Length: 143
Image (cartoon, rainbow, N blue to C red; front, top):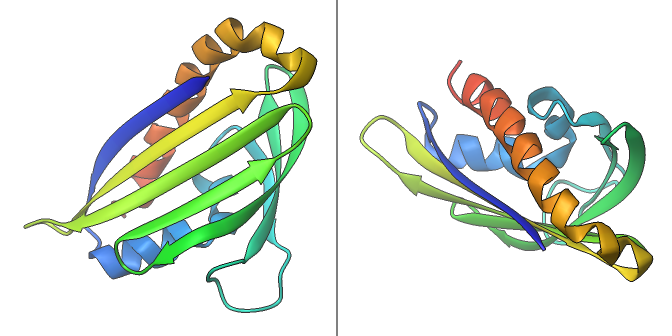
């Protein structure tokens, strides 16, 4: 399993940061590993909302459909994507701070099937992906 966790201080209040992060179509703005992202369900963002992402991973593009599985504004949102090769669960939590809020991003990526053989390499690559995404998050959450 690959895991990445980071906490970012934001000048936004928790509700504003929550609304931005829960709308996972914004991932293409802050995550350089995401080529495209769009909402595919027609309702407002909430429990069950789905997003299609095209992720670039080690030179390959991987389509992922994320679904919001936990929606607790302005405290927590969890998104999950599952394919034959990977299971990705991203949990984002928000807590108020004197300057705005703290945003904690906790991502787990589990390899599946024959792709499990690559798990040690994927874990190393995932840390680099997380570090690059953190830079984008810091930029977006502190305009």
